[in-house]
Every structure is written in structure tokens, then in C-alpha cells.
Length: 370
Image (cartoon, one colour):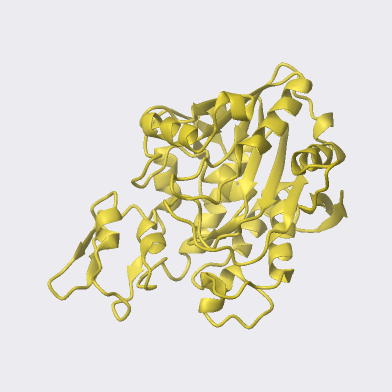
């Protein structure tokens, strides 16, 4: 497969060129306006951000994309699936309220919001996975499964289980129904490093499956018969006591995410945009976001989600680290791989390798600045 082209723009503006205008120009240069979207129900897949977390993509960016979809004759709607863990996006009722609270209104985004997998996360369609090593079908939220085209809008950042979260993570995990998320997470049973545990109890309080208890010795214990592998405990632990599973968990989960992405995108017009700004060390699923580990880099776009994610990893790795962050807390050397340094039990390359084998795209790319 020949290298894909990834387009990007920095965040410099002037009185005659706003960042929203730059996004519109970027999309057109990257070929978005050549997509066949006429009369197509077009899912704009985004993460609305857990209220309290301020790293999510801002709604006015969505409006640029939605208006361009409408210009091409498409019917855009904004969507995400419910979460497996506890929080404000665990069901459609609270999820919609959280989205509106974070500004994702019709006026701000130029389109409406639909929760992809229904009220309680049980509305899904089993979609075939072509060439999957882990599954033959994927349980995808109905609104995405039934869409005629898919556009992913992705906040690029670190992730506790997959190393980073970009286009593939936002699609494969983000569009999965609750049953699908259970399948994706089931290999990831986090562990407690007792020497680091202070017995603060935050993991016990936040565990949606009631799998964690803090014993008389003030040490947390995980009941893996109850644990769903959502890794919420990993995100909320301030002492590096709760850690993602060692071994193959990150690899298998990342590969399953790629297979779910293949099911979602197969045979449909699609396009992908990564916002490499507020590059927080963890995902946007928690009600807080830690300080960004690098300065804002820009917005990247491509029809190839594999090349896009690879280009963004490379851009983050090439950027200077910001002192006083989760990256430098762990005595970062100052150059090289960042996400693996923050989350040493992960290896993000497995997901991209598997996606490439599935035909989703290529890790080889050329970068074109707009």
C-alpha cells in the first residue's frame, strides 16, 4: 500500500484568518468536499467529555464539519455511545444532559445529538468484521451502524489501556454498545500494586461494578469475578497503585478496537480529524483532565485513520515535553516515545499494526501542511 497523505494546520491565526476558517480550509484541502454524502445520514462521532473534564473538542469545530456535510447534501448528526463505567454518560438520559452542559447544543454544533446505543446501551446491531482475528461480528450502536457515512472527530491524547486515544479508539471503542465494550475490555483486568496503595478508597467509590474493596489493612483488593476491565480505577488512582493489566491485555484490546473500527467503516464513506491540542495523559472519560504533556500542535485530517493516528503520535513524540506534567513526573529523558513512558504497561503500536493488516489504512504517510 502506498503512503497516505495526512494534512495538518497549526493553530496560528490573525485577524483575517480564524481557527475555524483554518479548519474549513484544512478539510477542503484534504478532500472532504469530494466525499459522496448526498442524502446520506452522516454520523459525526465525537466524545462529549465527562463534565468536569475540559479537554474535549469544542462545539464550534463541530459546526464547521456539520455545515460542510450539509453543503454536500448529507444529513449530519452528532453521536457517541454510553459508557461501561459509572459517570454522567452511563445512560442516554444523563449522557444527553452532559453533552448539552458541555455546549453541544443544536445552535452551537449546527446538528442534533443522538446517543448511538439507546437509553441503557442495549440498542446495537451486530456488524460483520472482515478478516478479524478476535471476533466475527462487532456490537455497534444502532445510530452508527445504520448511518450511511461516518466522520470521526477525535481529541488526541494519552490512554490508560491503549497508550493513546485517536481516530481508531474513538471509533472502535466509542461506537461499541455496552455489550461490545464488555467484549473489548474483558481482557483488561487491572491489578493493584500494594506497595503504592494508600487505602484512600477512591477506586472503591468509583468502581461501577463494585469489584473493589479496601480491607482493614488499608489496601485495595479487586474481585476479578466482578471486574469488567473498564480501568476506571487506573484513571482515578493518584498513586500509581491501580495499573492496567500487564502482558497481552493492551495488545488484545487494541486489536479488538481495530476490528470494531473495520466493521464500522467497511463500505462507507468516511473521514477523520484529530485535534492535537490539550494532549492530556489520560482519556476524556473521567471528570478531570491532567495538564497537557506537550504544547498544542494543531489539527490533522485524512481519509486514512491509521496514517492519521501514526502522524499524530509522531508529532507528539517530536514535540518538547512540558515540565511539571505526568510525563516529567516519571523522569522522562526529554526525547522519544511519550505515551509508552506515561503508560508503561501499554503498547499503542499493536492497534495500528492490526488495523493495517485489516486494510483500514497504512502507517506510512506523507505530511502536507495547509
